[in-house]
Length: 144
Picture 1 (spheres, rainbow, N blue to C red):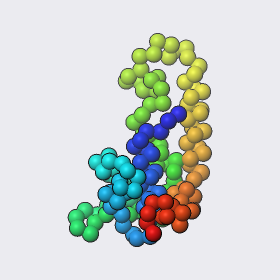
Picture 2: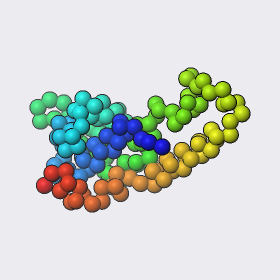
Picture 3: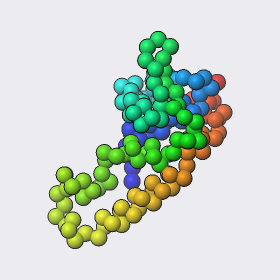
Picture 4: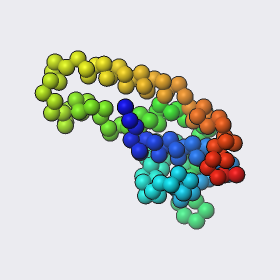
C-alpha cells in the first residue's frame, strides 16, 4: 500500500505545526521546509481546516495553527479522511469497477481486512505520539 502525496503532506503539515515553537505557521514556511509546492499545500491546509484539525487565519498576520492539542488529533482519522477518495483497488469503487471476477473474487475481503488493520494501528497514535521528539524536529526543520 502506498499513501497519496496528499496524505503525506497532511501529516507533514500537522507535524510541522505541532513542532513549531510559535503558535502560527504559514504555508510558505512549511512549503520551504519540505521543498514542496505551496499550491498543493494550500489544498492540504484547506482540507485539514474543513476537518477541524487546523484553524486558519487569512490576511496580514494570519497563518495556521492546530485546532486542538496534539494528543487529541488521531493519526488514523487524519489518514482515513485524506485517503477517503482513493480506492485501494478497482473493485472497491462500484462506479468505476470493471473487474470481471468481482462476483467470485476472494481477494476483496482479505484486502478489506488488511486495510482495517492498517487503520487500526494508525488509530492507536496521536499527533503528540509522532512529534514527541519535538526539539529534534525543530532542529531538522530549521525552527530553532
